[in-house]
Length: 291
Image (cartoon, rainbow, N blue to C red):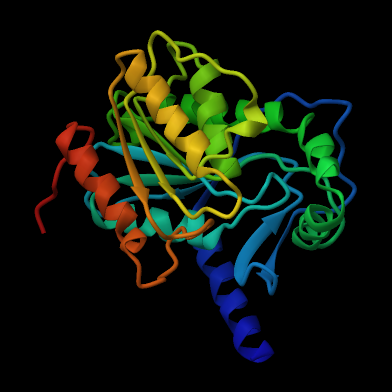
């Protein structure tokens, strides 16, 4: 089994090297420093390929063979301790590519950890959950700034990549959902996403919020049985948009748990990304391509 995992990780690493990587500009914070290098590895705990200790924000560019002008920035989740880079990142990007959508997987700055950040957040979640909040607090603003920087990059370079600067979406999972909403709440006219898809977003980490006057259209995805209790905050987010007369939709699945991403569970929630695509077609954020 270990040999299979090793071969898989080598294949994934070779695939990543084939993708275009873009370093994003960022401002350093003297209060947050990293002593462990960025690392990509297979986590037995999460049963997924993960990335930890991101200190320099980057975009992995996934260009569609037949770009239709739409682009989506994808922010994987991981409690800000890691990134579930495959099931909530690269696999999402490749699916979108087949629909003509250019995707950018965002590696935003994370909590500085030791060599296995996934084990750290798992252990702290079991023994000292408050510590997670303490470690996340100074990093979240940096992660949000990286999201805003990503939009600026895509919009600035849209014409070179055959993209429409007015059809840039932002999709984030769990902690990446917090980044998605942090971007939305802090955006200016120049770095505002044109549509957003928070997927089981971690809203409580953001605290109190108000719906922006120029709030982009939003589709919320979550499952009622989310074990982290994210269903109600997700429904509240949808209600906030609705109450303020903003364009919004929601798919709340009865089952799906947390962190389902592109995993196959033989549940209705397996089809969430198709629902996102149908919503984007309905709202004319994207269009079908000739095959």
